[in-house]
Image (tube, rainbow, N blue to C red; front, top):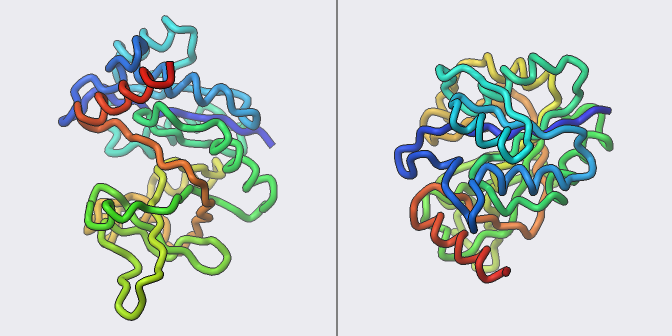
Length: 242
């Protein structure tokens, strides 16, 4: 079973312009993400998918592989699918977000393993225990699963709502996805659904169309970089690591 990792990297960002090229401890963020991904044991190749020549050149400069994609894509999934079309012999594609410079290679390997263990699996993602201070933060996406670890729902609101108990668990969705290639190509052409548009969460499109999403658990929380404050926080972490 052949598995590859694709990192969508869009240059434009309203809250942090030029995000992929923002420096983290002296290296562009896209390089930090790439270097984490290539340490995964279960993927044979790591590719950056971008719509901007500056990002493409930066990746080539540090020795990575990048492909140019259309600037008209409405989502990272569409960008992912464009690249997937170029790899007909690939079985599984793992989508690592270009703003997760601390993603552990073990997370990528765990998702890859899930497809080796279940031939019927079409899509998988991750969750971790959520901190209480994130409960009311709409940017922190919550997920609830069934007894077999498949997603029931994703929301920006608090789920489950603790009406009758205090000792309840809330899980945070970690934005890394893995897809069987054939499913990804089908998924990318589905029309946006009502719940997806209401919550502004693309993964709800899969659930609304009746597909199952396996949700693995880890203790990785990550620090996604969306704002200058996030960038400063990550830079501080890297400096402390030194």
